Amino acid sequence: MATYHIETYGCTSNRGESREIERALRDGGHRPADGPADADVAILNSCTVVEKTERNMLRRAAELEAETADLVVTGCMALAQGEAFREAGIDAEVLHWDEVPSHVLNGECPTPTADSEPVLDGVIGILPIARGCMSNCSYCITKFATGRVDSPPVAENVEKARALVHAGAKEIRVTGQDTGVYGWDTGERKLPELLERICDIDGEFRVRLGMANPGGLHGIREELADVFAANEKLYDFVHMPVQSGSDDVLAEMRRQHQVAEFREVVAAFDDRLDHWTLSTDFVVGFPTETDADHERSMELLRELRPEKINVTRFSKRPGTDAAEMKGLGGTKKKERSKTMSALKRDVVGEAYASMVGDTREVLVVEEGTGDSVKCRDSAYRQVIVQAAGDHGVDVGDVLSVEVTGQNTMYAFGEPVRSARVRA
Image 1 (cartoon, helix red, strand yellow):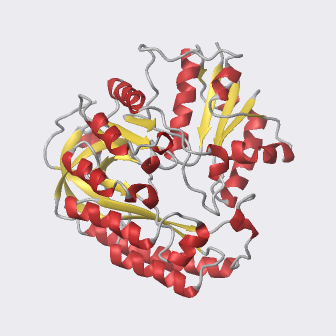
Image 2 (cartoon, rainbow, N blue to C red):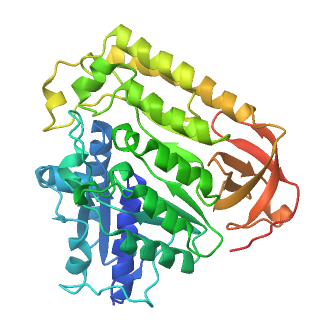
């Protein structure tokens, strides 16, 4: 029996891949180490979404190589830029996610059985429903790692979700590179059916849908919004990256949607849900983005006022078409990022300020700093309960809280009655 150490960077989908690796290693008799220095093998599940992340991965890989006897690198950077680790002089096995367990277990990779419990993050279960996407964005390097979408059957994903619930999951995070195109490779749009069937599983739990591009959601917008309206287990939360408010920039990005289609998806959810959270992403400083294009993005943000916003400066990624374009320069990208980030803080802060004085039912999902806990309401807005021990609150509880204050990115709450569900 050997020991292992896993570090995961990047998106929720990557975290889900790490949990599958860990499940196989545990089934094979391995056990987690206290840290890389105590591990027989260290596994780095890497990300490479922007240049800064790439540099961080190389630095961390070098540190792990010095600390542990055997280093395995997997994940998006390993699959898209595996040669970068060798060129940096790092002695590591560069492997696909599925290859890691077999390598560590000397060619053996046990098939999970009914007695094999999935690995949870506390009370959070991660369910990668498919790998890959149907897009060909001109700036994206992740597609080189994940390829085209490959969707397992609905029944297979439902059984994985059921196993997560039986293992104690109170929150299931449905994830993938683009959840909206689940099933497209088989000629069907299966996301609404999958979510309905997961919600039909017996038990007290919530379901969060992960990132879905507007192009994939547009064709199922009304059906999907109906599923959300009909199922209380679904967080009323949609992460749909628009990336730009300019159709010209979206065309250069090859994003496979226009701003009007993004609006139409938002309208479908607005029509059916009274209280929901729109999460979106913007890339600022794309090589062809003009001042007018940037202002269109700002106008879209002011108009739709998403409750969660990710702002990223354009970063050239090797091998992509956008890497060959003449860039705007760091100063202009920094200025645009600064102005959009300031607007983001105003918009998000306003959303959380509007919650103050409300009473909300929340699920306690994670421990916070000190004696606080992180909770989520029905729209996946974050509520922090401080002095949780004094209130008798544990992770996995469902309780009512009065929202007493807010910060820019979250609210504060006080329990108004004792927890009714305990993990």
